[in-house]
Image 1 (tube, rainbow, N blue to C red):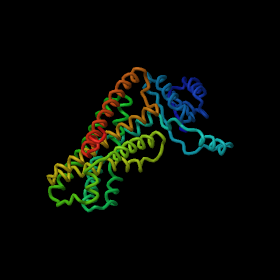
Image 2: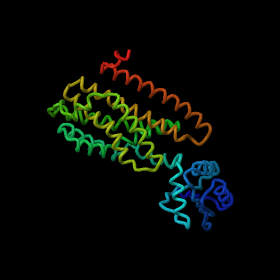
Image 3: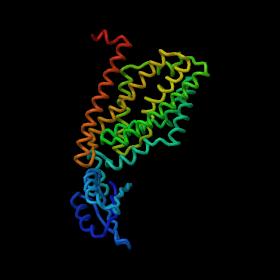
Image 4: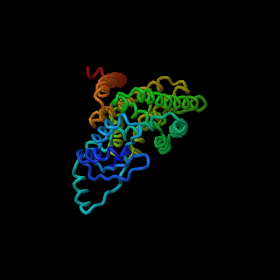
Length: 334
């Protein structure tokens, strides 16, 4: 559950308490009116009702610049029948644990192109390159942990679900900057370092099979499920980093060493994984019912969703065809 706090003119108090009852709030209470005439009304709302309540509150105060809607997390609510209610909640499946606005606030942080993003990208690339060159899987995993590649990719899938063009361009810019910086650093390392591409950690990133497609699809789906269900995204971030950072570093190392064939194989792996992550994330957002608030925005987002789903599905089909052709599997299928 969450506490939805509305700070607005005191004349809205009766309306707000009525809305709390209509949307099934567990409890509602209000404070004293302040000197500015505003009053805080708080409602204890469960996951299933919170999105509808939030949408109605935004419609109510869309012309009121002084009104504020604040959503606060709740760790535990203790009542006389707490044990019984907890058992009931464990048996009930939640459709979505976070509202659209909560998701937006969380996801947009990962799409910001700032100093922290660039520094983490630089550090993770250096660590990944050393791990690949030394064939040290523990070091490669360390690079995956600090790689900031989860944010912009999930933000891109989320933005297309809402038809938010500004967030789409922000996510694309951040993603391009992160991958571009990682690639340039790896190329520089490849120019000055003698590289043995027969090492297991490097060789594994110069080719891709259908198992890699499944891994990337699972990574994208798990990332979105963690966000919408309120689970920790740390391990999911590692999964997505597995799919994106090592292939990017491998491309740069191969280019710096003039190994064009290996660079092409790593590029195919990176392209497959990016498309799979975006497609899986998009499908989970669709399944979870993440969509804009107004009818006009929903209509625009519906068109955007169809376009991007078709684009990523076609790209994935084309990439799978290339994979099967390179492995000799396509002629056998034909």
